[in-house]
Image: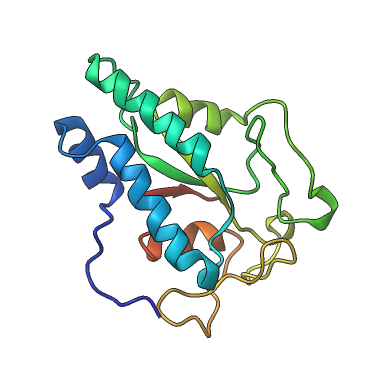
Length: 177
């Protein structure tokens, strides 16, 4: 069970303010997320795929852009988990199905383009039910999602991985559907 105490992970609003004020760099925020994911994901199964190296590269780019006074938008430097239903160019997108284990889209879904354009950092793909069709957090691809407050329970919903990641304070924000 994740202890129901305040986490060092800021909310998306807090993270945005910290990054804009220069109190926390996108690099440090991304490292914090990766550390929490490493600790809790093996039990909770929020993330199916984590792109640590690519996320850190994005974080370095976002930090440099901030230092030059060139933020991309309101989500600049904020790490996000992306539900595995959304196409992300060059990243595996299984849609929670064994039939798409090796699917790697050539282009981003429109919402992913917008997130990137606003400066979001893509940390990884969050678990989903097969094609997002069931209300239980079961996945033959990623394993069943677990409720952070009581891992003997599921989190429910096809956006289970996204919900778990935010509830367990693994990331400031996720994209679900």
